[in-house]
Length: 370
Image 1 (tube, rainbow, N blue to C red):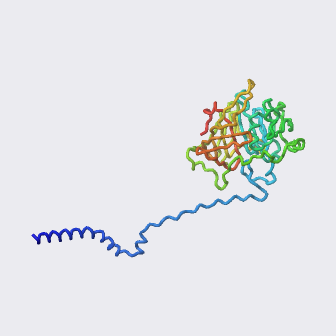
Image 2: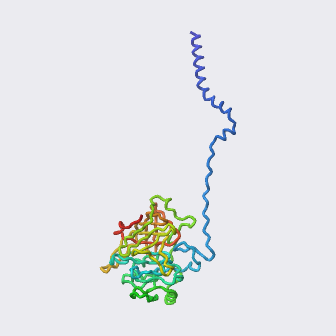
Image 3: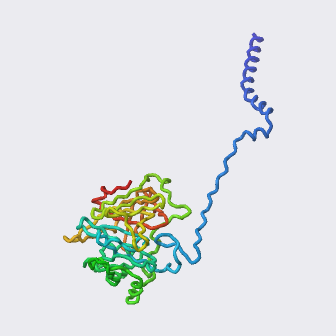
């Protein structure tokens, strides 16, 4: 019996040692590889690319980036306030002069009558460089709530009594009915234009500041993208192609068509291209298009109305053949309108001229953006 027990003990001992030694065979394989060969087999980690810091754009000598367009203009204009010119948009008022040289143009319904006819409010920084601007017509309360965003001087010819309360406000400056008359064969209401010398005369005869005053906006109205790194719509979710903007403006049928060659949206109305005889018959064109959905209140039975521009709503930002949904908010008459993307961040817009259209919420479904 003793020899049987000894045999079993040896058998168990040998079997147990065999299981423990199996992993120990692995290092023996390493003897066939040198240290250099092992290192060669390890994958190299890719080097992280350092983001190049964007170099600040250097202004050409004697120039600065306009706060309205981000384009280079004379430094002599840096402190000069823009003007906001009310321009008639009845067909009889055509052709318009000077609009192709404007910086920002608002278009909005001016009356609930006459198939909701629109009127332009034209913002111009370098107005002395333009030979003829207009024709000039009356102003509405809405315009006197928007112009202060820019510390702009409103140029108009009268208006309904609804404007009186706004004209009394310290941050509203305006010139009314003090511009030149041009014999163009049309009724008198279509003959008033801003001609060279008119603005100088107005400043001499009033206490209105030519330069920015205490009501100057505290921050830029727009957040511009760098020209070296413009807004690229395809990089953002929710955007879509847009080569046509057909606005639901029944009276004049405003339309913007994308021109890929110039990278701008060309403006047409009344079925024809909008051309400026004061600037070589160039067609009105915009790098940026902003549309705001908005409600309004009718003030009387004569068609006078006011837009609810103090508030918030939805809209679109359109540039370079692409469109993106946005929201907008304006908290006070002097406060700027801020445009945000669907993530809530303020949008950047591209360098160039901007069209801003107010579209009635009751007709928003008729708007074509495609």
